[in-house]
Structures are given as structure tokens and as C-alpha cells.
Image (cartoon, rainbow, N blue to C red; front, side):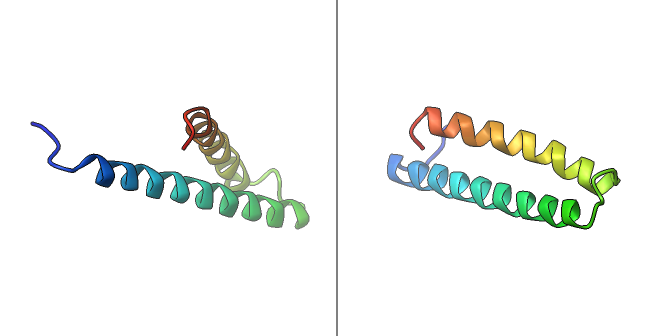
Length: 68
């Protein structure tokens, strides 16, 4: 099944995705900083955020490699 969206619509969707990933990455980093300030770096929440941050950073890196 083909995607009926135009190239402009697909580009807009990619741009929206890239912005969302970057915003989520910033939010995760802020949450981690808050936990670090509270000396809670050994909590499950911090570890989950750490894993999420790694994934988001990789996505952002790949987006940047492709100029998005």
C-alpha cells in the first residue's frame, strides 16, 4: 500500500518527529539533572531515563547526520 501523502507532507512529518525527539531528549535530561541534584542516581527511574536518553541521543544524532 502506497502512502498518499505528498513529499511536502512527509517532510513536515519528519520535521515534526525531529522536533518531538529533541524536545523529549531535553525533558529527559532535565529530569535526570533533577534526580542527580537530589542524589537519586541509583533509582530505577534514573536508570530508565538514562536508557531513554541514550536512545534519544542516537536518534538525534542520526537525524543530524541526514540534515534533519
